[in-house]
Length: 206
Image 1 (tube, one colour):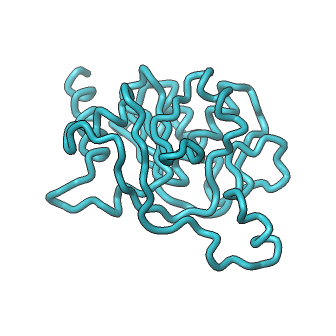
Image 2 (cartoon, rainbow, N blue to C red; image 1 turned 135 degrees about the vertical axis):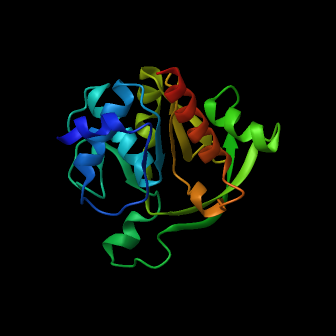
């Protein structure tokens, strides 16, 4: 069993999560999707796990992790949001979550842009909702991008990574925000529409 069970699925979504529970299983599932061209969509924690998997298995940083899972990792590719660490150490958890709507700048020429453009046209700034305390560590950004994990969405000032993708993969996108918060049964978020479209097209080709 294990990752072999994933063969029967047309696409995989890993959503929000907290703490270490199930993190290694998620990372193994993401690796399978990346290596076998299975559409993968990571939401918040799912994006963070994708960054960890890529850092471990492509960059070779075998102990790469999130500070949320292992606070002593020597390669914290996901870390506590800048300015919040001191509050956490003092047990001041109130106000340490990035919450609510925040603007996201979409990088041109990306799969992310293609998905949004299909619904909103040529719009390079969108507002998306958040609920997280940990995020992408920019200290690793250059190395990750050079190895193929492209940043496709950022804060308007380019300081916060909002979304990542792998160029050339049918669909491998992770978002720090929660597109499901803006989805409705008859009006899905464009990223879900694109994810399902890719899954269906790949299935028809099989």
